[in-house]
Image (cartoon, rainbow, N blue to C red; front, side, top):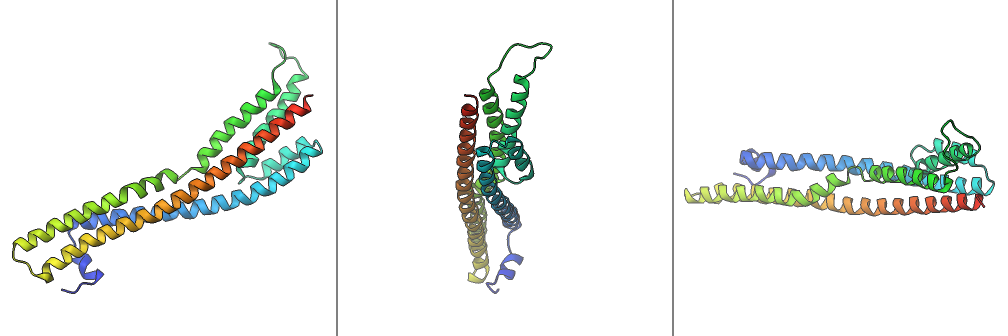
Length: 226
């Protein structure tokens, strides 16, 4: 028997085949997550930069309505979505302070209202940015062990053939399928681990940006109230 991949796959133990197919399926889904996150983070970075530049100019000119409108148009920017909530809370809060409702309980803290609006959306945006990353972490941590399981099964099969007086032609494929299971598991895990670490670092940078812009906006609201 020849030691090529087709021959090895043809004679591979059914359990090792199932394990290998499962790991390949996890790798395909991992590549989908990686591709989707690359596109999402790329668009988010571009719109974040564009909106932050616009926001600074609008706030210097006290054009809150324009900043709010611009935030609504930047649908792929986490910073814009957070600021849309904060600017909306500021606008609504200013209107509320000029009116009395049927059950008016007096003035409220506008800064606290804006801050709570920002925090709510920041939590949601951070969760959205981490979408798919738990799967990559699971793949990175589990596929080496899944591959090892395939290896163990392959080695057991090789020992059974050896016990029956097998030669290198019969034992070799069993050992080869064991090594292939290990190689597939490690390959999938390495790719997933590298992607997870890279995207985690990107998420942390996004979170820093969200916190910085939110903090600066709260400072703006405080100064406007003086």
